[in-house]
Each structure stands twice: as C-alpha cells, then as structure tokens.
Length: 437
Image 1 (cartoon, rainbow, N blue to C red):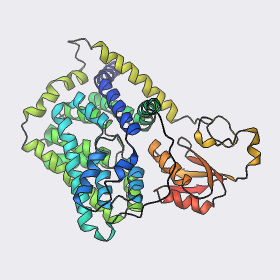
Image 2: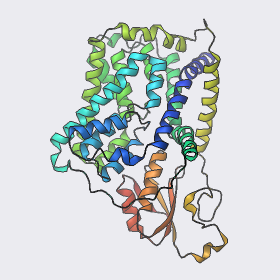
Image 3: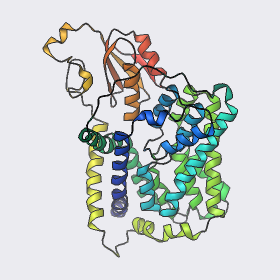
Image 4: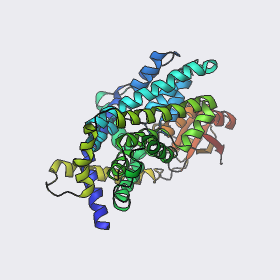
C-alpha cells in the first residue's frame, strides 16, 4: 500500500510540475513589472465597473485566501470601494495563473475554462450585492497619503525580483498547502472506497452541500485543491460537486472569516459567504445538469485515471520528470525557508541583506539615537501578510527601520514612535499586535 501511495504521488507531481513552474514564473513577472498602483487606481468607485476591474485584476493573481486579505484591506484603505474589495476577496483566491494551468494539466480544458469564469461571476455577485445592500459603507476609505519610496530597479533587477518572488516567496506561501493537497489526494486514492460518492450522485444539491460543508472551514490554496478534487472525482464525486470544492475550499476558511468580520464588518462578511455559497452551488448544478456530460467524463477516463491508477502503458516524458525533480527541490527549499528564521545573530535581529538594516550593525550604530522594541504579530500566514505588516509599521511617523520575521511572527522596530501608534497601524491591517520587549 505504501508503494501504491508513492507511485500515485509521483505520477501526480510529474503531471502538474511543468504547468506549476510556468504559472509561478508568469506570476513573478506580473509582480515585478506591474506596479501595484495600477490595480488600485481603477477600483475606487462604488459601481459595477470597479467590481469587474477588481476581478480582472485579481483572478490571474496567485494569492491564497490568507494572502488576499491583507492585500484587499490595503487596497480598501488606499481608496478601493467596498464592493470592489469584496469582489477581489471572492474571486482572487479561487484562481491564479498557476492554478489555471495546473487545473488544465489534471482536470482538463473544460474545468480550466469554467473555474475562472465561475470565480468571475461569483465575485460579481458579491461585489454588486455589497454596492446595493451596504450603501452606508460603500464609499472608498480615505486614501493613506503616506507612501514608501520604492527603489527604481533596472530591467535585470526586475527579472531577478520576478524569479525570487515566483520561486521563493510564492512557494514559501503556498508550498505547505500544496504538499497537503498532494498527500491528501494520495490518501483519498488509497483509502476511500471506489464509487464512494456514487450513492449521492443523483441528488446533486445534497452532494454539493455536503462538499460545501467540508470545504468551507478548510484551508487549502487554489492549486492545492486540484489534486484533492481529482481524487474525489475518482471516488464518484460529480464534476459539479468537485467545482464546488475548488471554489469554496480556497475562498473560505475560519481565519479569513474572523478577519473579515473584524475589518470589513458583519454585513460584508454575510454577503461574502452567501455569494460563495450561491455562486458555487449554482455553477456546480449547471455543470451536472446542463453542460454536456462528455466534456467532463473524459477526465476520469483519461489522464487523471492514469495518474491515480499508476498506468504504465506509456513512459513519462523526460521533460515532465525533469520538471518534477526541479519542482520537488524548490518545494523542499521553500519548506526549509518557511520554518527557518533568517536572522544571523545581529543584535537588532535584522537580516544583514535587508535594506531595512540602515547601518544598525556598523561600528557607528551607537551614535544613532533610537529605541528598539519587539512586537508579537498574530495572524501572519504568508509573505504577503509580512509585507503588509512591514509597510504598515514603516508608515508610522518616527519609525527608523523595521524587520518583520514570518516564521517567528515578530517585528523588530527601531525609532521613537510610540507603542500605541505601531499597534494601531498593525491592527488596522487586520492583525493583532502586542509589545514583547
């Protein structure tokens, strides 16, 4: 049984790895070459156009359900309307350029096309409803006029930034969830009896509601949800119910629900959850009852069956094997980085390679008048969270430098800014913060 599990896991990684690597690379290029101000300038009005703009910007972005929250809250505080923010929160974590390509590699072209379309329609539903039923709060927040001076990078530096973001930051963010999805898919393949979901298949709504009940509190990224959905389909889950899992799993989890309730309000949270519920079930029901069955039946009869049943009729192409090896090494590296602090013993706790060090480690550092404090930050789950916390603290007046460490969940701040101002800046971004020393 262990051999069967390993073979299944290797076959699935070989099938997904080329598309994942390409998707990460495209996402890194978008991050390095498209300024964030471009996204924010088109989301300020409380109308349908801003909702559509938010979705068109968000759907290709590879943000998980934790990473999308600080991003969306930051956009809202910089001027994005609440309707656009809600649409961005719904549509973005369901897809991404990496997950769309991975969906195509495992589940086929129909799923790869339906999935972003479903995210678009569901996000529109949530954004428009927010504009209609949350009118007293729909106007955009007052933009924060303070900003951080970003260094001007050359083309070569942007290329390096794109690669670093794609194969370091992104993999650190979603690597553990991708591993979780792959392992769970292998376990489902082995331990769940064949045709387990067949008895529920004719009752489409019950089938989807059961999946929704399981998927909503889970934390799984858009890419990590793909092998799980694939394995469930092999056990008899209908394509429509599988799409419900692909939509609800990445878009909701208990952590994001609590943060949204705190930062955007109970009414927006209800609209957010109902939109995902109605949109995912409606789209799944449409797939099972209206769209041609042949579009999706070939999934379980073709390459997906070969992956999970260890077909050896054809040798795996060398480029897939090479991609799997490269991806595996990058994934191992990301897990090491995720759970290893990069501090090198510096007295101030900073990274010597950080631009934020500001010469604090030099011999003349004692000549600088400053106060150093360490803050405990709760709620950071990815590099997007870390970046938003760092930017929030850097925007506080009289802060000289700040280093935020994701693995330890701490922020080391130097400067004469008050503890209250720093804590307020962090909590406004949706995180909890307290002084430790």
